[in-house]
Image (cartoon, rainbow, N blue to C red):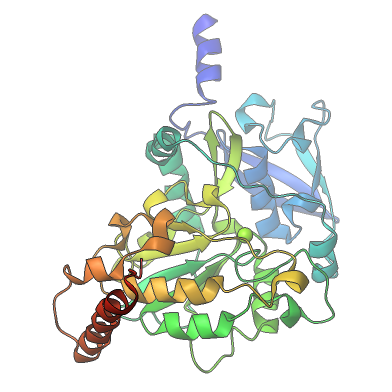
Length: 365
Ligand SMILES: [Mg+2]
């Protein structure tokens, strides 16, 4: 008995129980078969149901005999619930009719939180999370909109609050677009393939990027779009359960193009990087578009950073937290001289630097 109890409780935190649960979910007069792992959370179950029904997780209400309202707690681990494959689950929920109204009206508050360095390492290296990533790699298909380009680095971009203020209202989506978006994507495209990854549904991602003209701009091409189904749920001791965007999923699908050394991801939520902390840059959120659209220049500054680091062999050795004070001059020494245009650009940069120093006695830094 004691051993059985210990076994049950250890499944909460430690190496994945490989046990699979097969559940039947009834919705809108049809039955769906959903396979999940015993160590998955309710949030993950809802994501799998979303894959089959297109009902977003936040719109699902799950009913199951004898367990009351427990399935409304997304953080619960399925192995702690008395689920049986002989019993059927009922889902109540509707596919969103007007996705824009839905997004704006949703009261969900997303606050960023810091996770301690030790804990980040712990989450990234945990066997249970590696297993989750492995399963996600097997399940999630990435559809290429444009071919990967040899020799390019990879830029992965979040949408909400990174490229777009999804909480403000406007007559036209373009009013909520972060300033300089197209200029930024055009400049980045010279050195980086671009993948957009949002924690919302693919329908929303396509709609939003389409409205902003990102999918049809002649000056750059988007390699792929990823949605919330590509994310995994991890557990931290201090912050409980949350979702994140594991870049390992992309690296596993396109190993000949992208890896930990040549990828950078911009997101306003640091926790999204928890599986690959050296590849994330926490972007200042773009909120209150109407107030800020005349002054927000984050994408201009970030373009300079992206281009300044584009020739480094390994960009994951940089501390992206300090991107604003990145010293390109200091990094010139590390670079081989190979590009005449680049050399000329930096020759004048040096000249300007020493001239300013000579004339005003100030340093550019
Ligand atoms: Mg965001």
